[in-house]
Image 1 (cartoon, rainbow, N blue to C red):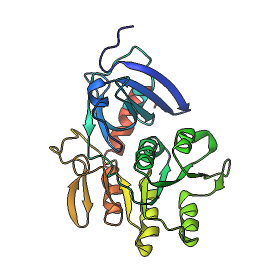
Image 2: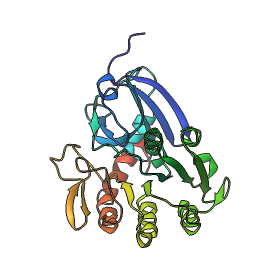
Image 3: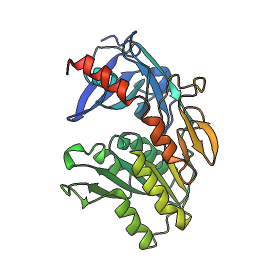
Image 4: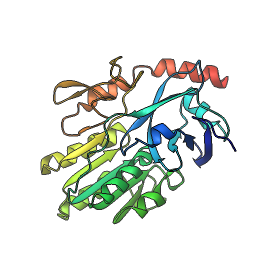
Length: 279
């Protein structure tokens, strides 16, 4: 079978609203590193959106993304089948995760953030770290990448909001216990909903545990030219696409980030209604 660049090689449902796509992109796969992302367009009339890479294989010449289907573009992505193609795909973008032997690393992920968390945990483990992973979702049916993360972790804790699997509660509960038990944490890495990352950063700050968060602000071009992905870090304006996506969680202005990420909710809702035909 002849595979062209940006062809969908594999598509599979991970949950009712998350689809994993493996995409032919040999040039991107050859340079991709943990923590980086791509910008893609489904068709020539579509919007350009950022998605973090959940995996990449230079040998196969493919990258993998996990798509949470909540808007028009992500629902279009979720409908793609093997043999379909993307109109455009640009990457790898952003600065990769800083890899070194820190000692004991606690990686925390929630929701769709677990897709990005997997290659980060894998890379940090390969760098010689002791990896403690804490993963969470609303229910056990919505957990993704659990098996993959467990394989590259020395210790894993599962949390669900409804108690259907693992700890009945939030990922922050488990982190608090690890801190209270004086586990000797050298660094915390968090990726997921903004409120989750904010809570984690506030929890580690009094203990002076360095905390890295991976941000996903609204982006248009992904190259630092449009300024749409501005975030405030330590009182200074940074661009999520070229200065990030990873930042010191103790210095991020999460209130500003939350407000900026809500800028186009009305327009997004209108676009989705038109696409689905809903009233």
